Length: 169
Image (tube, rainbow, N blue to C red):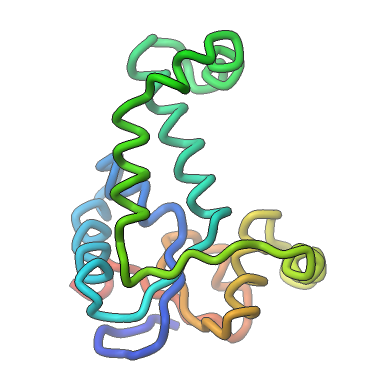
């Protein structure tokens, strides 16, 4: 189910919405950027989690290392562990994370042990991988029924409404 604009329901923002905007990846990047601009303007209630932000950070660090060193994505994590200055000196990555965290109307939720426990049941019930199950558990915990994402796996979960930013352009 697609959530249409004008709804007052809180929308949980998945990592791929941030990453499509930041990395300019795919045909959805412009729609994702507009969606985040609307979130920043307070056009609708929005939320995400520290797990999503960590996913975004991890992917941005990998992209930064791949871009600056020319090594492949498969070697990037090992390369960062061997060269911690690449993490410390990833200035653009830290600026982008500051920009994301400055979306003031967006709530950022933590993950409690109870949320983790619920995610285990969600994994078994819906066949989601760990982080996606944590997103669903976090959404349940905070009574959020809609997610902005391009991840088709969430469509398997009954009761979750999906908002693809490109569907509302």
